[in-house]
Length: 130
Image 1: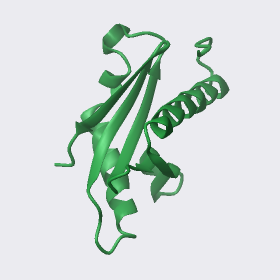
Image 2: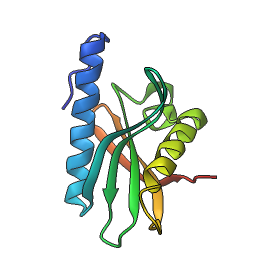
Image 3: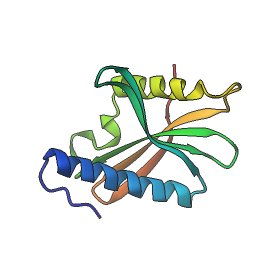
Image 4: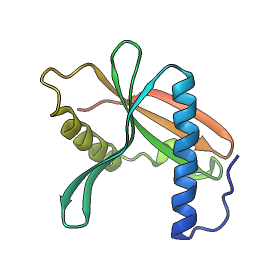
């Protein structure tokens, strides 16, 4: 599914985009509708305070903020384990910023799509915004 060759910046960017494409296709097949891709919130010149890979809406109206992580294999805890508490806080910050556009925010959740080699795992409600 993926070519996990070298770790240069262009290759890393291409691998990340391919992983996001695979995750998005999977989520859309499950009935979610894409609202935003790579939603970024800045913290100053050339600094990112937070980013959400995918923002989708479930059939019941729930906003789903998705972090996509990909690893060549599941060693070292795998892709899902790489969503650290610091990364979660950045996702929560970006989600809060996104929700400012809603007078009455709908229900929300944070999902993780982890790709370990060719294995895709969708973790719904992976963490809470607490």
